[in-house]
Amino acid sequence: MPEKTEEVKTKLKSLGLSNDVVQAAWPVWWSDDAERSPSALNDLKFSVARKLGISPSSLFDEGDATFVWQGDAKFKGLRARSVVEQNAMTAFGHSVTRLLLTAVGRPAAQFDQGASAIEIRSSILRSGAPYVTLADMLALSWAVGIPVIHLRVFPLEAKRMAAMTVRLDERYAILLGHDSQYPAPICFDLAHELGHIARGHLTGDSAIIDLKLAEDKTEERDEEEVEADEFALAMLTGRPKPDIVATRAPRNSAELANSALKASATEHIEPGPLALCYGHATGEWRLANAALKGIYPIQRPIWREVNKLAMSLFDTEELTPDNLDFLFSIMGLP
Image (tube, rainbow, N blue to C red; front, side, top):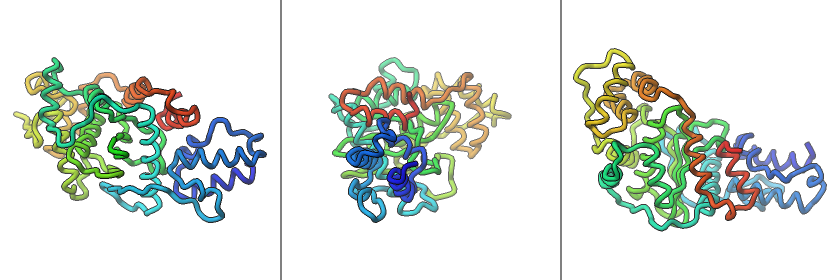
C-alpha cells in the first residue's frame, strides 16, 4: 500500500474504527493514480472524515485524528468501553444520520413527542390490521420522517449494538444492529427506540446507544430504558406491563408456538412478540426464542427487508455517488 494511504488508514484505526467501516468509507474513485495526486489525497481525507465523523484537519496534521461529535450521548448497558470507542460510535451515528436525513427530506408529518403508544396502536388496528407488526412499525417511522436502517457494517470490531437513535436538527434516525431471522425481536427493538423519542429522552443533538438486548438482566435497567420498554410493550400488546400467563406451562417450544398462534387472534398481539412476552414474564428466554421457529416457518434475514424498504424511499439524487455508495455499503446492499 502506498505510504500516504497507509498513514491515513493507520490514523483511522488508531481511533478504534473497524476495518470494515474504514473500507466502506473509502471512496470508490480512489486508485493508484489518485495516490500520486496531492489534490486527490486531500479529497480522500475530506471524504473519509465526513463519513466517519472525524475532524478533516486532524487527518492533515501530524497528531492523532479526532472525532467532531459535539452532542450528548447516552450508553445503555455500557461495559468496558473506552472514551475513544464511545466517540467512535456517536460520531459514526451522527454522520450516518446526517446522510439519511439528506436522503429522505422533510416529512409532511412529524412524530409527536409524548405520543401515546396505546393511541398509535389503536390507529393501526382501526386500519384493519389484526395486530401491530414490524411492517406497521416501519411504515409509521418513515411516514413521520424517521428513517430506519439496519447496519451491516459497524464502527467497532465488536458488533454488539442492539440499536442507536440519533437526534439531529430536531429530527431523528434509528440505526438497528440486532440481527435476527425473525421479525419479532427487531419489531421490539424498533418500538423501543421509538419509545425513547416519544418519551423525550433525546434533547438537542444527541444519541442513545442501546448495547443490551431485552433479555439481558445482568444490570439494573435505568428509568429511560424502563419507559422505552413500556412504550414498546404497549404498542405491541396494548399493555405497558403485559401479564402473560399460560394456563399450563408449555412442555416445549412447539407448545408455546401453538399457544401464541391461537392467542394472537383474540389478544390482537402478533404471535412472535407474544412468545417473547412469555419469555420476559417467566425468564424462559431460550424456550421463547425457540418458539419463534414454529411461529415463523420460513427463516429470513430481516435486515434485508428493513434496508430494501429504506433504499426504495431514498431520494438518491440528494446524495453524491460517493456518499450513496457509503450508505449502501454499511447497509449491506449492492
